[in-house]
Length: 149
Image (cartoon, rainbow, N blue to C red; front, side, top):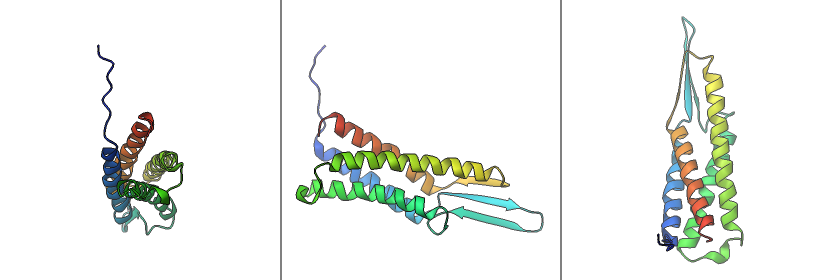
């Protein structure tokens, strides 16, 4: 067995961070995280968790800020503007990716618990953007830290 370890070019990580986080952040802000339908017999009520919802808005904004930090980080690295970043920018991004993923998971649990009372409930595009973006974001930062970048 060969002990040669193939290293992935650093620009691949930064481009991956840029694409994943830009799409996840925009979709999280522009679409609903989840929704509920209540049928009370004579009245049908539709409710959505999104940036307009006063309960969900702060959490969604925090997750979006975590995603957009990674966009800023990757743009500064791609354009060789490292002097605008703190020395521990990679660690900050790594921990923000964990925070974003945990908040999306907590939001998921909240939607499920609230949805138990509803006639029907569902996850929407914002949820999928948050969970897929959060996982990919974490994996990219994890691989970058593992390569010692």
